[in-house]
Structure formats: structure tokens, C-alpha cells
Image (cartoon, rainbow, N blue to C red; front, side, top):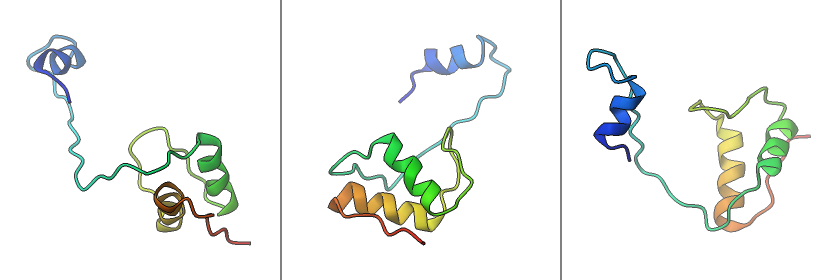
Length: 80
């Protein structure tokens, strides 16, 4: 959560500069964190050309695979 000083700093101390804020809701913590290399493998196995370097739409198949891993420690379902 940002304080005013953080927002002001993001705006380079300019009161008139526009900044963007994102509000996340309905979030859950995974029971087990997923390693970054595992996420990359899921993306590659499902033949999706996606990099997760910022807020981005995640296709449903990737989301459900990662959710299963993080919540149930299940093996992801890959498409062959």
C-alpha cells in the first residue's frame, strides 16, 4: 500500500502529473509458492507466448494450472 509520499515520488514531485493506481480484490495467497522456473515451464508447455513482467491478462489454462499447483500441490495439466 502506498503512502502519499510514494505517490508524489512516482509523479516526480509534480502535483499536476498523472499517475495510475491499480486496485486488486478477491486475492488469495497460495498454500505453496510456485517457483518462477515452474511458471515458465507451464507457459511453455501450453504453447503460450506470454511474459509475466507486469500486470497482464493470463489465459485461463495458465491460471488454472498455477492455481492448482499453489493451492493443492497438484501436478499441472499440460496439453501435448
